[in-house]
Every structure is written in structure tokens, then in C-alpha cells.
Image 1 (cartoon, rainbow, N blue to C red):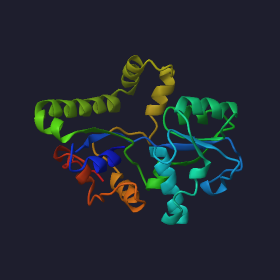
Image 2 (image 1 turned 180 degrees about the horizontal axis):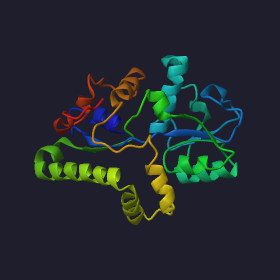
Image 3 (image 1 turned 90 degrees about the vertical axis):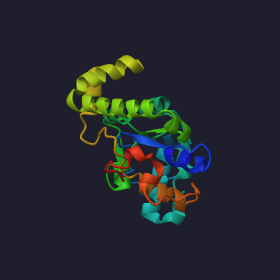
Length: 241
């Protein structure tokens, strides 16, 4: 979403990233025992994701297809995808009705993989070649320019929150559940946050390869020369990519 809105707002409201928020792998899960890799999907399969062709999961699946079969075949798996909200998709996957695969992220993939009939096909880090930012905070140029104090305070608070998560994951999980009112058991959430693949840091990672892929397939019209093109200057000293 950040890459797309940066591209579309270039020359007008000028949306850019403030900082990264989290690195969380998106996982493609399935209950079909015959599917060991993306090459095993057939017309019998239905892959649920938030939005066909346009969601982060959809673009990542297209990147996976391009990596395996070339950029000209990036849409090869689109015909197997259906749009579905994560909670509904998880319920359908676990019941075995309507879909047999789900491209999702925490906490849904962790909950799905607790069931012995569900297994992972790949995760987004496999596709990107390493950890990548899942969520970014972004703002308009007008807000950035007109509110330097608020901007600075929000950025500092975000960093403080990440320090809390790093040093007291249980407390962070308690705050999360209090705010969101989600029904995930506290111990389950702590287990998820303790997963070594999950990280919270201000520096964005692997945003440029995604943007360049989106440019190659015509999804965006501006090709960034650096990840810094998509983030405001306050982030530029971070070790991003």
C-alpha cells in the first residue's frame, strides 16, 4: 500500500513513509497434502487472500510466480485466488469448506498451523530473499512539513513502543489485547511475538525490490532509485533497504 500511494501521490499530496513498524512473514498455508510448492496448485485449488491481484499477499504471490516462471508469468496463480477477509478465510480453511489454501499473516497463520492437517507452502521472506517490512507508518507531505513537533513525537513514541516489545513481550501483548479486544489467548500471542522471524524496527527492509517488481509489471509508474525515495528524510539515516 505504501508503494502504491507513494506512486499515485507523487507530484500532489506527496505521501511517503515515516518509518517501518513491523517485519512479519506472510504465510501461504494449505490443507491440500499434494501441494508442496506453488507449482502444485491446480484448478481444483482456491487460495484466499484479502484482495485478488492488489493486496500485499496477492503481489507477493505474483512475485513468487515471477521468480519461478519469469516476469511474463507473474499472473499465473491469480486464477486460483479469491478475495476473503482473514478471519473468514481461516474459518473456511479449518472447516475444509470453500477454500483449501490461505495467504495470511500473524496471528492467523500461527493458529492455522496448530492444526495437523494444515501445512505451510511458503512465506513472504522466502519470496523476498529475507526479512521484509510488512507494516509502515506513512503521512502526507503537508502533515510532515506543517507538524514537525507532532511528527517527531510520534516517531519517538514508535521507537519507545518497539523497545517495550523487545524487552517485555508479555506486557506488550497485554496492551495489544486491551486495545484491540481480540480473543487470542495471552500465552498464544506471546508465543507469536517471540517467533524469531517477527521483528519490530524503524528501518524498512526489502521495500525496494518489491517496488521495482511492481514497476516492472506496470503496477506503479515511478521507479524508485532507492528506498529513501519512498520515505521522508528523518528515516534516511536508518539502515533500510
